[in-house]
Image (cartoon, rainbow, N blue to C red; front, side):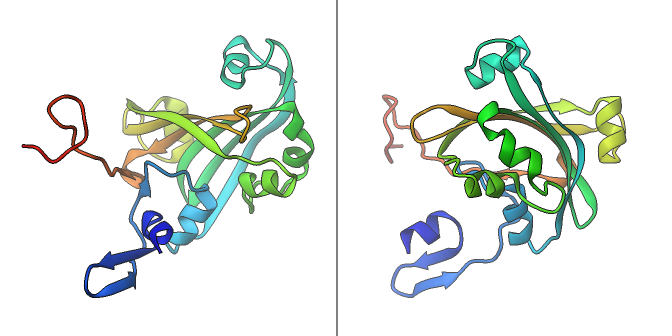
Length: 198
């Protein structure tokens, strides 16, 4: 029950019990849910438009993100992610070459990348990322059907397997008016420790 509560699927009320929670409006920042799962949970129909799916040598920045030698072949993937037909994000992903068979044959317009990777035996376990605000470029505006200069959120993340080997590095560019993240946090105490001292 605690795991369900942590995932936001139930609410726990002391003395009353546990109850099915309403679908959250936004993704929780401390958990990564696939875009497909997230939109289905919101009661929306997820879809993607594939802009690029290819294998080519990594750039220096891509090699650093995946912790592989520069120019090593990697998988490049770029999609527009939509909910109920409305574009929400431009997602650019690079993956280690060991994912090539799964990625190059998967249905990535109607299906989930992470589900395809799991079916192929890739265990995506831990990740870290950053989120920052920016303004839409001309390309962002065209692909997301927003105005040039509108606010966007940029999320950059890296996901590793249980052994710490990096599998995927992704940049997602979200139309800010269509996407947000919910954050749960502890209040830091006086000496940098968690606590309830005031």
